[in-house]
Image 1 (cartoon, rainbow, N blue to C red):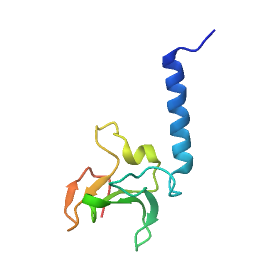
Image 2: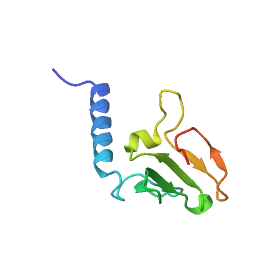
Image 3: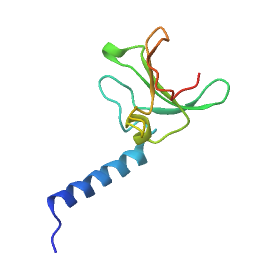
Amino acid sequence: MFATGRQIRAARDQRVAAERDIQFGSGEAYGDKSWSEPLHATTKDGRAITVSFGRGGREGHTLICDGHVSSASFYDNHSDGKKGHDHYFVDGRPAADRARYSN
């Protein structure tokens, strides 16, 4: 029996997602011309966070969420339909407060 095109695409997507999760946090995955790759970090009071910093036209902006999360959890929409991170402007005002970061 031969695999269908749909099965082949699904298998490829699973491999890509698995590889992305393996590389996540190493500086080798995600990020683009507008955002740095997300990094696992801690706040000065020791709370685990995941963060990405703006580049170019987004210089000074920050994407952030509580915990050390997977790449999929950080970027993808959750069951509530919202992305897995909050977005803050240069001056610290929330651009998108999705209740993912408790500052």
